[in-house]
Image 1 (cartoon, rainbow, N blue to C red):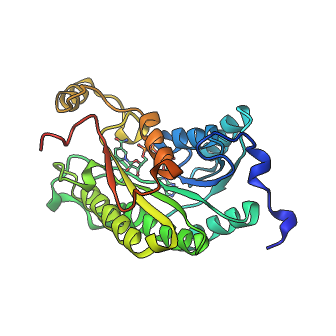
Image 2: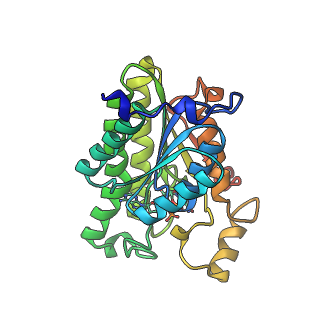
Length: 270
Ligand code: NAI
């Protein structure tokens, strides 16, 4: 490692007392929705944030928002479905900061992008199934693989974004449900394999959150979804970001292998 290329994160986040002061964080899907909200929350809690996304302009916009609040951030373009690009993403993190302490593997796609919205299992095209699994499941596998290597013996925290669809079936969403059940399984596997090295691996399982992933707002669909939720509303990206930040902090030091719901109670009555 060329030391001159390596920024000292403590020099850019000097304020002690914040949950993640002096830490280096990596967030995938940081250009939009939950990922963008998480990048801002990680930065406010004192972390230097590597904002990764396939959408470089969006990642740069997140970086600009962090810098406007005097935070430290770096934009990285990476498609998490590509092993070469995930390896390159972790190389950039290493070149810039020398290490990573907190990873939020959050990039993902929904049924809208994979043309499988509203389709029964038998009507889902194989190519659309493969695309869903490539991003949502293999993407998390690849990130874990290279993050765990980089964290090595030093310890750290990894949070993966699953979904309530990782814990229960939702109608007409077979590929999404399978991908998110896989994320919960990967999370638990990594947790039992790496806990002895001081690396905690957990999953967040959001209910319906108001982000572009849900698609254009449809009052009828909203009424139905809200009627199924004890709190009668969508969650916000910021509410999931809070959970990711807390899980990444020392406040959650004995939480490992958990799949925590943040769903307004949607699954509580099942
Ligand atoms: P979003 O669409 O606002 O953000 C997703 C981000 O991931 C975008 O910036 C997109 O460019 C990026 N992305 C997509 N594919 C990528 C790839 N191959 N490589 C790198 N970046 C990629 O969606 P949202 O809602 O913020 O989703 C974030 C995560 O939360 C996803 O894993 C999603 O499945 C999960 N989730 C979302 C829920 C919701 O209701 N919005 C509910 C439960 C889970």
